[in-house]
Every structure is written in structure tokens, then in C-alpha cells.
Length: 90
Image (cartoon, rainbow, N blue to C red; front, side, top):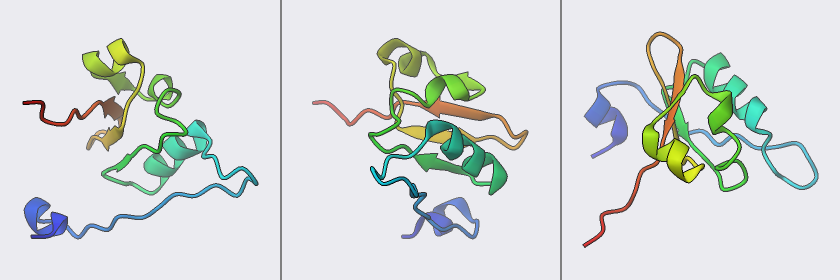
């Protein structure tokens, strides 16, 4: 099953790359891209996991506690929030 089938929306997963020689993504440019492209959200690369949170409108409590995020969700009102998705621990 595809994500677009689950969400019942036309969806695509697009990489956001950096033109810089080191290949690192600027966290502010990432947030601007998510807002400007009217995206549903995005996965965070390790380059900006610890720096993108303060640039967003909201962080979930766990993201604030650990100081790192791996997912940005863009809400219908345009606000971006971030969260930490933890793997299942047995």
C-alpha cells in the first residue's frame, strides 16, 4: 500500500538537497521549502535534527526534551510542528 492510498491524497516524496560544497542542508532553507512548497511535511536529515526545531512554530514535548527532531508536519493553518518518532522498544 502506498502513502497516497493511506492518506487519500496525491503525494510524492521529494529530496531537498543543498547546493553547498559540504552538502549540508541549511535548517532555515528547509523550513522555507516546506512552507513554500505547501508540503504536508518532511523527514529531517541528521544534518539539521538538532537545529531545525527552534525555527518551527511548535515542538512536541519529547522533541524539546531531547533537543532533536526527525519529522516536520505542516498543519492546514500553515504552522509547522516537529516531533520525535521513536521505534518500538520491546
